[in-house]
Amino acid sequence: MGSQFIGSIGRGTRLLAVAALAGLVGLAQPAPVEAQGQFSPVVIVNDRPVTQYELQQRMRILELFSTPGDLRQVALDALINDRLQLIAAERQGIEISPDQIRAGMEEFAGRANLNADQFLQQIQAAGVSPETFRDFVAAGLAWREVVRRRFAGRVDIEDADVDQAMSMTSRTGSAEVQISEIILPARNAQEAARSQQLAAQIQNIRSEGAFAQAAREYSAAGSRANGGRIPRSVPLGELPGALRQQILSLRPGEVSTPIQIPNAIALFQLRQLTETGVPAGENVQVSYMQYLIPGGRSQTALAEAARVAQSVDTCDDLYAVNRGQPDARLAVTEAQPVAQVPQGIAVELAKLDENEISVNLTDGQNLVFLMLCQRIEAGMADVDRDGVRAQLTDRSLGRLADNYLAELRDEAIIRYP
Image 1 (cartoon, helix red, strand yellow):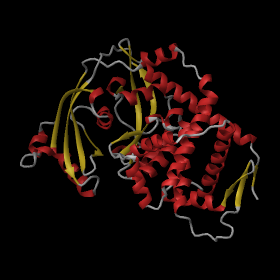
Image 2 (tube, helix red, strand yellow):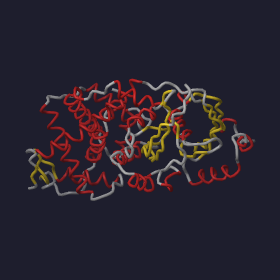
Image 3 (cartoon, helix red, strand yellow):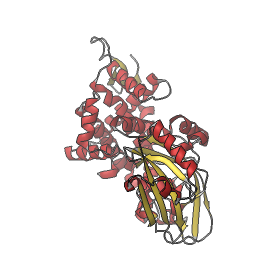
Image 4 (cartoon, one colour):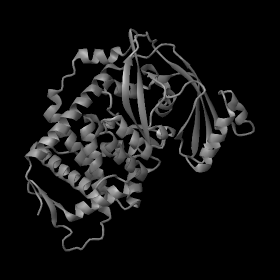
């Protein structure tokens, strides 16, 4: 299953599956309600009741995740969608095997840099039962299979579509993009789950203004004060492959799927894509330095980063900053192809001009003071054709899934006792 779990069928499905976690993870610790009546229905969807107990649990976990809006209405809408998705899976005779569930659990836990057992241990300590997490994974996989069976044969990405997308990074048709970012912290299982919930909502944004507001409210990046806007126009060849392929499949205003970077989740909104007509090479190489500051994203570490930033003009100045300290605190990388740079670092470097810095990353214990020393256009690596096709397919399936869910809701008999 790997990274295909939930994320393989597009924005709508990911939004619904991740949103479903909010109600499921709360089931391990019931809210204080009267035993008599906690299972009374608050809404009945095609003869399938949603109970007061479920609604209270969904509202409680949404509150824990700082979800904006009317929590009761948000929770009720999500629970209605859950019922419709499960009914659709049952009608198609879809069953998810234990091996598939286990693979899905591993993938989800990996977003918090944990394996499934470690993730289960952490959420169980927070009061969430292992069975709750397994049920969530199974539900997400079932809905993905519903969409695959219904729409896979109806999505035909032609070679011309792939050619057009790839031409923007070819030698004869280079392009650059203007993007905005939101970086959500994911330093432990609970924080990762909360950020996944926020990411699911942010993915549905379609306007620059709404994305900028979300960046100011939620982003941990320094760009939050500027609504998440990255000042420089970024040539596509400077982006890591996974992000580049996503950008190629976005329309202006659309938001990428969540991208896992060290101890955080990143989302990017495409504001504008411009074909430059300037031939691009076959690869881009970067030289950069990482100066480690103990304390993670603590105020002390951030203050130290600000002090260091005031004392350096070029990468060479970092040698003086590290004088008398352990050599391990300063890591130097010379002329490495972007394709070989770890994804989180590559994403940050793409935002920078030479001798600019980023303090958006941590390695768990240390704040990473990242500085771009040099960018050399030694040619641009070929874009993975199959990867571009997969991204375009993913977007199409996501839109079809959104429409299908809306149809199911229009056709459903929804009663409020």
